[in-house]
Length: 363
Length: 109
Image (cartoon, rainbow over all chains, first blue to last red; front, side, top):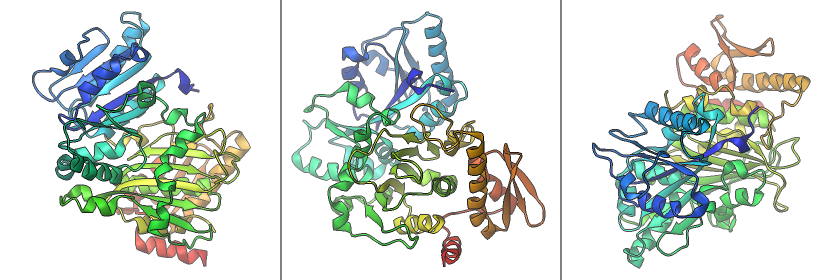
């Protein structure tokens, strides 16, 4: 049995090329709270530079070069983390309590997460922490429009940091923020030059702390719960579970007015809300079947469920094909006992997902 | 390792979450584990019948998935179920297939 509190958290810092990942990491590493953080940097190119920019070259910093983590050197990633672990256990490098991975700007974050989550050795020593995505305030809108990777990095993130806001004019930000919110409605968002960056909040308080922090899970749904489904309306499911309310990404309309047409317009978020407790067994069969067939299109799924037979809420959290073990939260944070599931999808039809789940669940 | 290994390469499937602090499990004792397996078989068969497939528990440690003609696959846990089903019938098992949804809705009536 693995005690998750003993596992070393692994944070992934992602974001498109030039969006300020290294600058963010540099800033975070100055925080004394992160003094015992090992850093693993992946650069795409023949000559690695980012580790020099961090101004901290030591044994706990590893550079993976000449390939992108998500496609060509995942074995190298696994080996590099095992090597760090082995050296730490042997006392050959300073003890570290956290590992931060800076990926290339071209990387799809999912295979990196999958490597940490599923590697038969790594999963006994490391656990996934928050994914932080940087978004360039000046170029972000165009990158989202033109680069699939940029949209997916934003959609998968647990924390978002908009960089270079001091260089962007107000119009740019007015277009960019709704676009980001279309891709990821609920991740906390910082404006890097303006906001003080709380390293603790950025890197920790992740899904594994949810059992103690029900308010964190509630935050997932904060933006959806601010009356937005009243704008969007809701449909009534036929499962007999009571109304199933659903919601499209809150900023779809505004975002679509950006004038940029692209594949990323297919990425949107929606929520399903259930009044009655869910049958866990059937929900598991449905979600497993859905992820098996459509995992590549389901960038995020996260939910707070009222499960039959469970007095407290159960949090589920998945990234594409990867689902974290469901977590028993300590208590409901308020009187609202409805199950809420948020999907961030690439091209899937909300109505069909909703109808499918209602058909699977027993009446 | 392929991207699917996040599920398939893992010894623990999320629906089988082992008991540990804070992690959800309904499998706290042997009798309840057995009942949960039966519920899974029943729930899965409601869907699998659409594809002419049937799932059975095997010794409480695995599942056996069969076609009507007797072709059989051993399934360790739910993550393998749909991969095995697709292999047996040679086509996709899609929960968003309108024909499947219509049949499940008809079973509600």
